[in-house]
Length: 104
Image (cartoon, rainbow, N blue to C red; front, side, top):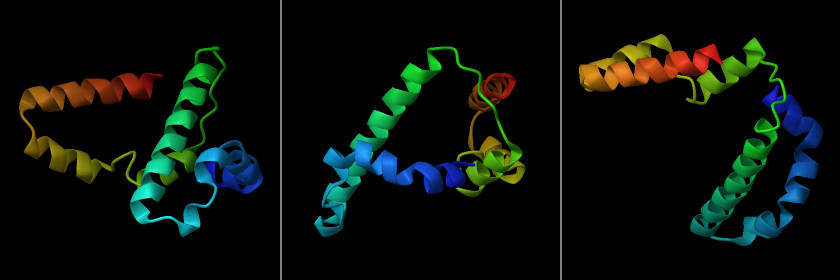
């Protein structure tokens, strides 16, 4: 759905963020990265404001697959691997946060 959203609204989103994004193709990678970071900050702020209105969130399984593929939602093997790298206390904190996010 995120891909569908970008297909349908990517032009409008880029136009909204145009002051940060214009001319990026001619800029060095460092400047491009900074501009994208600022744009992401603006999106995060806008999403935060939208979430504070109490709107209901509709979630689709295909969104989960996309987030897993790009690394935002680690698969089970990655979680087990990370548990071996961290202390039991750190793993417990992670498990609690994950459960809290899943319950939302």
